[in-house]
Length: 200
Image 1 (cartoon, rainbow, N blue to C red):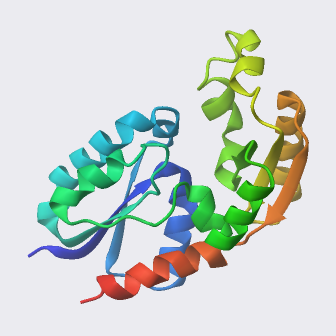
Image 2 (cartoon, helix red, strand yellow; image 1 turned 180 degrees about the horizontal axis):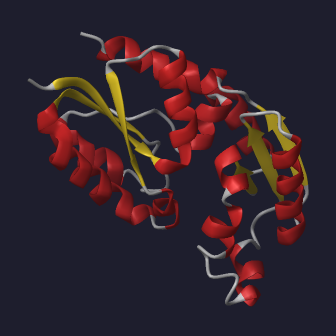
Image 3 (cartoon, one colour; image 1 turned 120 degrees about the horizontal axis):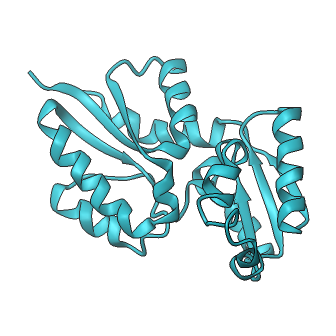
């Protein structure tokens, strides 16, 4: 008999998502995470998500996708449409970490903002430096980041270690850093709106 709900999620939000599932006692939810490296190749996200849907949907009564659009330019929504499967609202995961109003205000204040989350701070070298090939071609850094004017670190936890790492990453990119503590409440609210619907 199929189990209740599968959440196909971006690996970049896995830690926080699993934490919220446990904290809220959502025992009907199983999380299946895809590689966070897909952030660097957003055109591959729809195909990877559909592959996971096809592989697992027969084992679950409901499937939900814990991705924002994530740079797919609407292609993820088109891929989900034939299945009638929903995803988290928003253009980027930064939006459901900060909350829509805060993210809109930050984006309006400075469109040229490079965002960090706890995950990206922890894995900056793997996903940004090595992921973009800057370790092999440091001359590309100025080209990749020439349109950015600042870094905003949306912090899910209050950690001196992560704050120090974020400062180091900002120095590496030569951009000023702003830290905004979001906690997990905005993400929890976004998930809860859907989790209530998932329950049978």
